[in-house]
Length: 101
Image: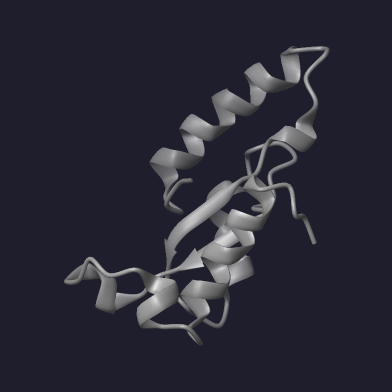
């Protein structure tokens, strides 16, 4: 899980290089999640701009920024059952549990 910024892109680039160097590594065991991502019209373009130099990087999931959580410590799925952020976290939880889409 990482925030979409240049510092994380540089770090991720090095991690991907190490992973690619491992010959017997199953890349299906990696699930990239971008978190605290603002909802903007050119989101794909911004992600490509930030992570463009990271080979073969595509986020598997995006957790959108939810300003209410900046001040609260609530269980999202309970407090906001119809929210986008609940759907975002559910996608990640399903992957962890092996219930891939």
